[in-house]
Amino acid sequence: MAVALSGGEVDWHLAYHLVEFGDGDESGLPTPRQVGHAWLSAGVSCVLLESAEDIGRVRFVFESWDERPPELDETEWPLQEEITLDLPTGVLGLESPTLGGIPDVLDVGGPGRFRTRVAWREIGIILDSDEPEAFALVQLWPGTAD
Image (cartoon, rainbow, N blue to C red; front, side, top):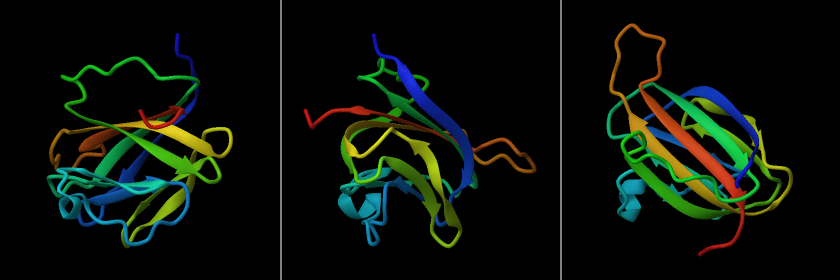
């Protein structure tokens, strides 16, 4: 049975519908629309997410697992993708264009290749509220491409 090793939660802001997480700098990662995907573009060590709406706040939940975690409920997480990331340091950061970033939102325990499940759901724009308008779940576990 899979065991969650570490995790963290952070509220962050999108800029121009975009937010990126990853290990290191992959400048020039194409937007999801440029690669023909509705909301996700993956590089070697970074992922760029694009929201459908011009939302402000996203609550990110980052989780590190010892092996593949249980499947997610598709009604709760309607957008899901699984990819492989090569993490040179094992520390994920979060960044939005023009807003800067947070360099260390999750430490997965060292460098390596990780299977990564990214899930996304938008709630919609909520005026005059401190609540997030979208949620992102990022789960990582050791592994190689299937």
